[in-house]
Every structure is written in C-alpha cells, then in structure tokens.
Image (cartoon, rainbow, N blue to C red):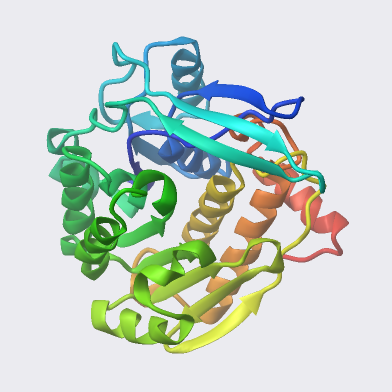
Length: 317
C-alpha cells in the first residue's frame, strides 16, 4: 500500500537566480516534490503527474526512480511542460517573481490516468488547486479526490497559486475549489487565498459545511494556524537561513503528510491534537531545511537531516 498518492500536472518551482532580473526556465511537477519528500522520509509514494521530454524532465524522472517513487502514468511527453519566471531582487534582498505559462502545459493529465486500483492502494490522496485550472486535468483531479473520499482515504488539498492560475476568472477558481471541498479532510490555505471564502471568522463554518476535519492556514515565517474540531492553535515557524523560498511549500506539505502517516494517521478520525502538532512541527522543519539549498528537489531533507536539525534546535521531537 502506498502512503501518499500525489496528483497534478506541473511544478511551479524555481532555481534561484544569482543576478537581479535573471530568467529562469524549469519544468516538472509539484506533486513530484511532495512524493519525493515523502519517500525520502522512509514512506512509500506514488505520483500521477506528467513531465516534458526535455533535460529537466529526464532529471525529474530519474530522481523519482532514485527515491523509489512509483510513477503512475506515462512520462516524458513530447512537449515540455514549462513555467517561466522573471526574478527581480528587491532593495531589501527579497526575490520577487513574475510568472508566465507555456500554453497547453496543464492539458496532459486525463481521468484515464486515475484508476480505482491506484486510489485503493493509497492511504493519503493529495492534490492542489493548480490541477483544477483546466480540462481534462480538472476531471482527473476531481475523480481522484471523489474516489478517495468514497473509499475512506485521507484526502488532502492545497489551495494555491490562485493569482497565477486563475487571474482572468477568480470566481471560476472559487467555484472549482468549492466543488471538491466535500471530498476533503485536510485543507491548506494561504493568507493570500483566504479571501476566496470570506474572512478567518468564516472558516469554522466552511469546515462544518463540508465536513473538513482540519484546516491549516499558512502564515509565512510567523507560523501556521491550525483549525481543528472548531478550535485553533498556532505552531510557530522556524526562520531558516534561506537562500530562497524555492520549494518550501512543497517540502512543508510533504513533511507534514509524512509525519501524519508515521504517527499512524490513516483517516480523518485518527487525527488528534498531539499528532497534528507533531506533524506541523515536522513539516515546518522540512520546509526550513529545504530553503537552505538551491532547488527544491535537491534540497528536500532526509529523515536523518531533519532529526539532526531538531537536535540542534534543542532536542524537539
């Protein structure tokens, strides 16, 4: 049985540029980062995500094989899936991104790539809102989440990249996410995306309406606020010696899902506050270690690295 089944069509992930206004081109799949993070922490991961037949696509597929991630649909499509970014170094040293998408990049994944057997052979089903932005990948993602819910799996969803993926039609984004919420047990949402559902005060009602067990609101370096059974508490972030924030979200989420699984969480009913707090701490450390390196795939930490980091931070566990 696979611990994580990660769904999606592409990565939005960047190798940090060394000069202001540097141009970056990179292809791949964000679900691959989650799957690799999970696998490097000693769990079994499967990925349903297609990548392009270019140099980076080959590197990504080789990396998946290296970490024993099971690839569940055909890879190395004829047309590369490409995201481009213009990076500007601000006066305060912060990098700022301007995004562009290669037309047709999100059209590779189809419902035929998702089967009852693959969903049944997994514990946690994970996807993000990028995968709801266009047909037929939207149909594939909805099918996977619905099947996961029907089979009693733990379903995880990350609301992300709304301004990038949906800048021309924000209402369509909200509608697409609302359609899948009844299938979701764990929802992650950033401050930027919170406006899709009103204000923070509206979140408990959103959870109750859709049967969401856990909602995590990511608040950057200040930490993450978790809403659990109508209550909330904050897990403080650890400030990393970051070169760039590349891949931090994927590393956080991969670490978080890994930790949940290692603590025996297989369905929503297994979640407790102690297990949740431990998972968030673990995922947070994953993200912090990740951003100390250049490139998310190369720098997603191993379990040994995480334990060493925790020991250096005062023996937290």
